[in-house]
Image (tube, rainbow, N blue to C red; front, side, top):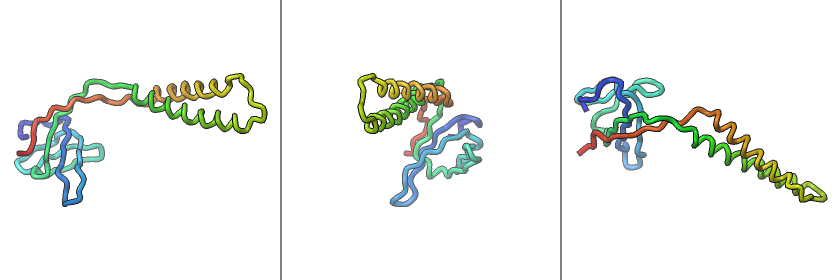
Amino acid sequence: MRALAPGTDVGVALDPLGPRGNDEVRYGRVRDVTDSTLTIWERHGAAVIPRDRIARLAIRTATGTSRAPNVIKWSLVGAAITGVLAGMAGAIEENPGDDGGKWLLVFGGVAAGAAIGSQQAPAERVREQVVYIRP
């Protein structure tokens, strides 16, 4: 671990604390490495991690970004919302017609959801290379 250069993006898998502890993964950039600790910059500041809690350490390399997850998620949300609205409109209607207006509403919702999803920040894709596993 001493060979890690400051500024390297890492993912650190920690051992759980106690018998009911959850596995925890911390992400950040290397700030300092000593024989007993690893200090990383996380989103909300620096974190000092004792070496004996580190179960696995991986170097993270950005491989690009993708908007696909956001577009798909918001398209499904738009379809669900407008599907419910179309069903309610059909239940309220006294003399339902076969004009296909309900389907137009659902497809419009999918299109609106896709448009909202495409405006979200892209998701970053990373590749992780494990460089340390505690023996």
